[in-house]
Amino acid sequence: MGSLGSPVYGVDTIDVLAAKDLVASGHYYLDVRTEEEFKNGFPDVGKVINIPYLFITPEGRVKNPLFLEQVSHAYSVEDKIVVGCRSGVRSLDAGLDLVRAGYKHIVNMGGGHLEWMKLHLPVKKPLIDHEEELGEMIVPAQKERAEDNNEMKNKIELPLEKPKPTCEVEAQVN
View 1 (cartoon, rainbow, N blue to C red):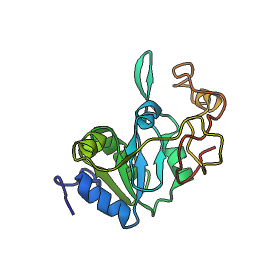
View 2: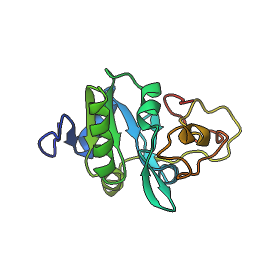
View 3: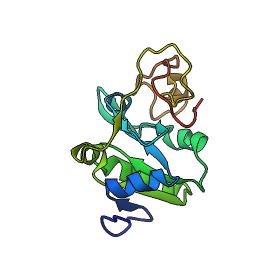
View 4: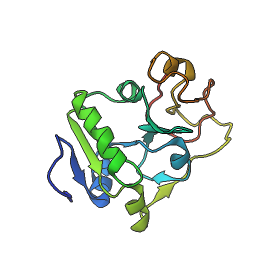
């Protein structure tokens, strides 16, 4: 495997080619970029789940308070998961949180989507405003659920309704 160094607290960082091979062999791919970044394209590795690790707010970047809960609806702690983001930094942070939460097989895609694009690997873009049934998708956290977390109250503005499906993914978080 194309390891990029020693594991950080149980999370190996591998290069994008090794990540591509792992997903082709059965690992899941979790994209932790923002919804806006995801809409610009994501690695074409089959079904991809987008669960943002951070939200962009007027106050700056805010950690998704429901990240672990949303991931738990999509994956079990035994699933083998490759975590990717824009550059490999956010996905490492997300991977560390997942390992701390008990996930046993987490791998970080070093270099992230930027390196994926640099190597001209296949990219897919979500279908926008498509009426046909596209399968299930991960949706952003609902505002009322975020308000249950007192620390986050009034800090993030999230849609009250589920957006229309934009791409095929593995599971849906309610």
